[in-house]
Image (cartoon, rainbow, N blue to C red):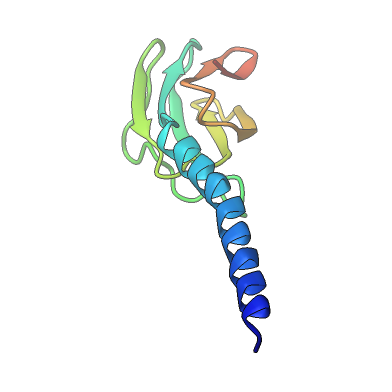
Length: 122
C-alpha cells in the first residue's frame, strides 16, 4: 500500500470520527439535560384507583403503578421515570372511567393532570 493511500485512509477515518463526535455529544447532552420527574395530580372529584405508564415503544401498559394505594381528589404523587423517551399514561377512576395520553415528551412535561375532561400534560 502506498503512503498516499495510507494518508487518505487516515484522513477519511479522522473525518468520519470527527463528524460523528458532535452528534454523540449532543445526544448525551440531551439525555443528561432531561428532567424525567413527573408529578401526577388528581384534579377530579373522583378517586384515581389505577395509574399506568410505560415507554411508548412498549406494547402493554404494565403493572398498576399505584398498587394498593389510590389518589384522592387534589392529591399528587411524583415519580422519576427511568428513561428519557416518550411515554404513554393512563388513569382509571373509581367509577371505571379512564383517560389516556400517548407519546408524551417527558423532557418537556413536568405534570400529568387528571381532570373531569381527561388527562392534561403541563
